[in-house]
Image (cartoon, rainbow, N blue to C red; front, top):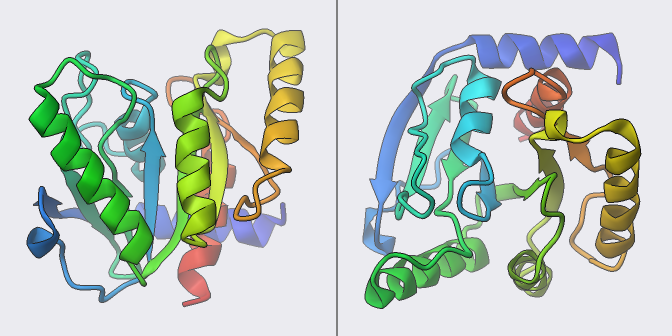
Length: 209
């Protein structure tokens, strides 16, 4: 990655990032005034931690030790250039079934009908790899022609041989997905691995719109 791209990412994420809205129904979604990127993944995969690491703000996105706690779509405005959307986690079912059905439906509606959505970053826990629920989300994104990129989280938890095997398996599965971006991002919010490169990539999405 070019140094200019890395610097563009640093500058973008050094600018103000503010909470915009928390939506639990379609009517509560903010207007589509800026390009958007969304972060999706299983509950407890580290979505909020990644948003906080990218923006350099520890408390911007609320993190929780209780999987499945975030049941709304959370929108953040980054420098009036691009919106970051923290999607509800999936694959965890301790909440009442009616609540699970409601937020799953809302997320699917958002993914299938949001014209301002430029890319979904699909987060995969390094210790789990791609599961059935993740494959279901990939199928939905393929069906709705929404570009997505896989982001491996908690990379510091694996040794090099384990990570190489995970990347090989992940590449084999994403190669079959028509909506998948070819690059796989390897990150650790705790150890600041891959954050600079991901910022640069997101800055590229912001600058082209």
